[in-house]
Image 1 (cartoon, protein in one colour):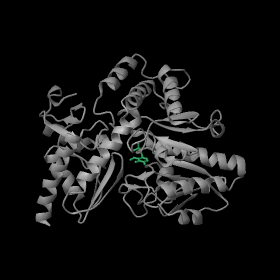
Image 2: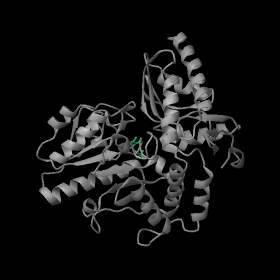
Image 3: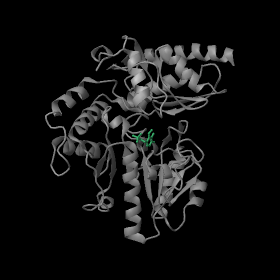
Image 4: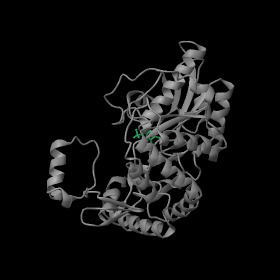
Length: 405
Ligand SMILES: Cc1ncc(COP(=O)(O)O)c(C=O)c1O
């Protein structure tokens, strides 16, 4: 839908938004009307170079033809409920499980729900097999796992706006230092059933896990009969240079969650695990009205097929290395961190929010994840020329903001 089709002006629409919608996000000033590959077009036809990717979602680009066609084709059967078989659900399950080496999938509607299902499975598995006290999960400090009550409890950011006011959290979570194996060892006790971790802490400021840490967690879980739960909501489906980030670490989790890039912009998430572990979820043990919605599954099938067939993980690895090197040349950079095209830039002063809005005025989109850290998660189709353009816009903006410091 476009502003010109509504009978309202852009200012009218913004006024209506303020009047009728509750805002927990601070929006850019424009109205996103159309997606076109690496670009988002606003109501005046301005083209924004997209290094935000709808928050690490639009990995094949904005409104990619294959995904759009799949949605259109499936729209003769929009929703049937999980009492009926639908084809996209079945074919997507096979595609996902075969390509990431898992046996079975449980569909969900978002990243938080995918994690919620993963947490529920681990707790029920522990209680069913080892007794009523074996339900504890250790997660990392500075993690982000979602905004439902269980995933908020799993999130290790006490005192943040994300968590404030929602206590008491559901019990059973303890927190250890990210990238510190000894801290995780110390946090686990005889009632711990699982360790849950992001391979790259995204919302926490883009911190990749070390290989030795991830391999150490795998070993620790094996030794103590615990499950390794990987939250790949943000890292999954090519972003880090592998289909799933765990493939880069030479390990396999017991359970993996996914969402974001999976659906090409349609709301879908999932959790995958082994045949054995999935027995935990017998009839009635978990469910959702919309999960596995056929239109979302058709979109996800198209999106994931495109990621695999176009070798986008490899491309993310190569372009990511190019972009990270460029970013290191920016003024006032303290550190450039990341894996593939999951990149954070830390500056030596609190510049991130202002920088984000200044760049948007200059038609470049990105997100700020900490007061001094910006995050770049462009579609994986981004070219080196587009990286040059983005870094040149960021450079000028940083120089201007530094003068005002
Ligand atoms: C690692 C991680 N887990 C979970 C979530 C929550 O996903 P959603 O916003 O789809 O509920 C996010 C969202 O940013 C995330 O980055």
